[in-house]
Image (cartoon, rainbow, N blue to C red):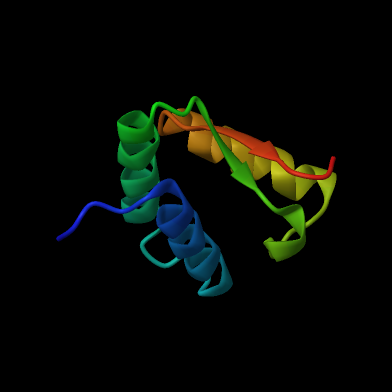
Length: 77
């Protein structure tokens, strides 16, 4: 499997979220690896692309990703 860029890994996570979190842990691991390779500290997500675009949904996503070693921020906040 080829190495994903941060943008590709982020798109995979959006697709997983739309598919009821299918393989989300695998996509988070790929995102974490891509962030490390590219030297980026935080993943930035567009809240308009999230299924739960409210404060509690964003906080839940941040907590879940943080448990897996990925810091998440949201654009346009």
